[in-house]
Image (cartoon, rainbow over all chains, first blue to last red; front, side, top):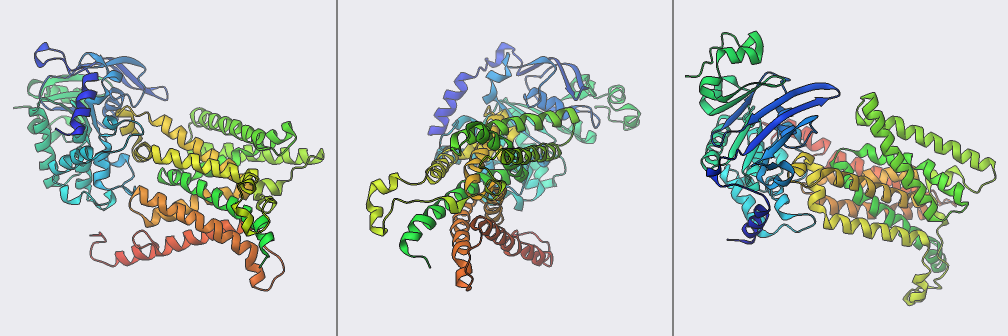
Length: 267
Length: 318
């Protein structure tokens, strides 16, 4: 085991992960409300993430899906409410959290290579003012390889296709070796090959016992891809296993009449 | 060409000051350019003017410390006012900056005029265009005397100060390059990793203010803007990695500092004129010229290269 792994162990030991059979949820959100400029975007969200299975966060445009992710990650300050990761406050469990933002959130002309971006996922482990060691670069390279981009490691990120850019973001999250992953529309606008790669990685993460929570835009593919669903529209409309939660009634409550007739009843 | 004594006493200190000012501004400017916040350099250099004048009027001397303290106070007040306007007016950051820095600059100009009316030795030209030609080093007596440490101990205050600021900025950038790059690229990731992005962002603004204030005395508050942006923007067009961009921007900064000074001081003589032109003005002009060349001819991001690529099959580089 390399130096990076030892460092990881040390860092992880400062964060608390209870044994799998202790029944502590990876993520508990209680009474979470968020406002932008005095406009309430999310109202009193209570939600407990399931211990296993891929989770989709769905809802119409402006329902507060991205805001929900950002508030849970501590990127926007909530008005009220608490977020607990494995039963402890988020601020003490940062190393357990990975984030894949929307592709549009950064400047892709920025002068960094794909490998540079993936290595950024390990900066939290490396620490302020410390050098990036070979072990961290190797871990970043492995993450790139996992999304099929090892050959493009040295390429400037602006010269990658949209799908490849999305995979770089996923690889960066993998390099973090987090326990809970939050992803903002990881499958939006990607090519078929990228979609297959990302879906395979998501299932692997789930199989490894990690929690994956994705904002998802495509109602047609929710049932085929995800196990759980959190339906938002300014607050929680419904949450639970896809079968039994993704019903016509709940869709109508979430999306209004537009969803009526889509016939997305879970099998 | 001047004799060696004139060169050592007049040209060498000015050359050193100009080059060090260019190096500090070029280095720090990289992070303004990378964050697409070039306007912030503009805002800082304008907004500190009333602070500099106030520091001067209160202390009554041209000592650096009161002016520095005044400038830093003004920078902090400007940052608070910009944030207030942005929140209360709900306008974008650029608009808030535009309102605040022009208003504060205007206040500075009024204060200079009021000071001048009270027979205070402070003129607008010196603040706006700098006083490179006023930096004198009397100690050296011929080239051989440079071997004497006592001669170096008498180096003009401005040069020592600029060297210290450059050394500080260079050290900070080298130690925290990882954090500066991360926060410039993706501040949200930095926050989720627990590396507080606001600290780095304020650090960048503070370094820019420091470099700008140290350089203003040499090249003037207006021309500092050119040095904060031009070398970094030139390097940005020519490089694909952050460390390469930093290195090239320093090279461009030094070249414009030295080249601009020599052109301003000796160029007119070579053309048969009897006068020299403003060195600070020449430095900024040269910096702008180099940037223009880079915009046109940069191999990948230049106008010509992009136009050429539009003619190719898909416009994608391999």
